[in-house]
Amino acid sequence: MVVPASSLVTDPHEICDLLKLPYEQVAAVHARYPLRVSRYFLELACQYGAPLLKQIVPDILELQDTETPADPLNEENLSPTPCLIHKYPDRAVLLVSRECASYCRFCTRKRKVGTSEMSISPALLDEAIRYISNTPAIVDVLISGGDPLMLSDQQLEHILKRIRSIATVRIIRIGTRMPCMLPARITNALVNTLRKYHPLYINLHFNHPAELSPEACAACTTLADAGIPLGSQTVLLRGVNDSAAVLKELFYRLLAARVKPYYLFQADQSRGTSHFRTSINTGQELMQQLIGHVSGMAIPTYALDTPDGNGKIPLGPNYLHEVEEQCVFTTYTGNRGVYPNTLWPDTADKR
Ligand SMILES: *Cc1c(COP(=O)(O)O)cnc(C)c1O
Ligand code: SF4
Image 1 (cartoon, rainbow, N blue to C red):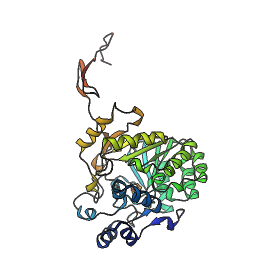
Image 2: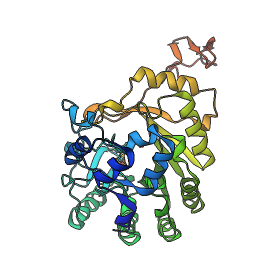
Image 3: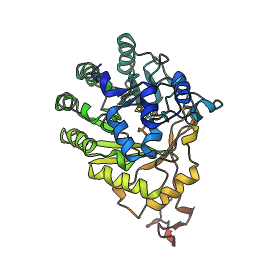
C-alpha cells in the first residue's frame, strides 16, 4: 500500500481514549462497519469539533438503522462485471480500490467499501476495461472505489494507460477524497503521472469549510497546476453542513482553492447512514438562500441520485410557476416577474 499504515488510525481503543467515547459501542459498530481515519484528519477534526468528527467517528445509530436498503441505487444489478457500474449509456464507473484513507460514516457504498464484500482484482479490472473497450457508447469513464488514490502511482498509471488507449473514451474522471483526508498523498510524482492522461478531470469531496486546511488547499493547487480541472461533490449532511452560512463558506473556499462546486448531493438512503439525512425541503431552502446571493460560480447542482439506479435529477429549488404564453417566476429576492414566452416572427412549430 502506498499510504503507510502508520498514517491511519484503525484501533477503536485509540479513538475511544482520545475522544473519551464508550469502547463497547465503538467496537460494536466497528465489528459491522470498518473504522479508519487518517491521523491528519483526526487531528484536524479534534481541533475543529463535531462537524468533522461526525463524519469519521462510529455512531451506534449506524447499527440501529436496519430497514434502509443496503444498495439503494441498485448498483450491484447495474454491474455487468463486478468492478464496473454502467447506469447511463454513455458513462461508466470503474471501481479500482476498496479502501480509503478514512471511512466516511455516511458513505453511500457503506455496504462494501473497506470490507471483503468488495472484490477487486487484476483479473476483474481487466474484465471491466475489456467491457469498456467493447462498449463504444461509453465516452466518459469515472474511476472510483473506495478511493482510487489508495493505489500506487504505478498501479494507477497501468489503469489510466489502458483506458486512455480506448479510442472511444473521450474523458476520464477520478473521484477522490484524498486532498481532504490525506493531502500528503498529492505528490509531484502523482501529478506528473496523472497529467499524461489528459483530458482528465478530478472530482474531490469536501463537506465543510474547516476541511480546507492549508495542507488541503496546497494539494488542490498541486492538482490544478497540473492542468486538472477540479470539482467538488459535496454531500448534504445533518449536523455537518446543513446551514446556509456553512455551505456559503465551503463553496467560496473551494473556489479560492480552484475547485468548482459541482454537485451538492441529497444523502442517499443507504443502510447505516440514515442519521445524516436531511429532508429535501431543507436542501431546497438552503439552495434558495445561496442562489443569487453568492457568486454563480459557487453554486453546485443540488441533486438526488434516484432510487433503483434511475439516475441523478436536479432538485431545484423551482423558480418557475407557469410556462405558457407567459412565463411567471419568482426572483431570488422574492419578487414576482413575467417573461413573455412568445416567438417573433411567429413560427408554426413553436421553436
Ligand atoms: C453519478 C454517476 C455517474 C456520473 O454522473 P454525472 O451526472 O455525469 O456526473 C455515472 N455513473 C454512475 C453509476 C453514477 O452514479
Ligand atoms: S472517501 Fe468516498 S468511498 Fe471512501 S468512505 Fe468516504 S464517501 Fe465512501
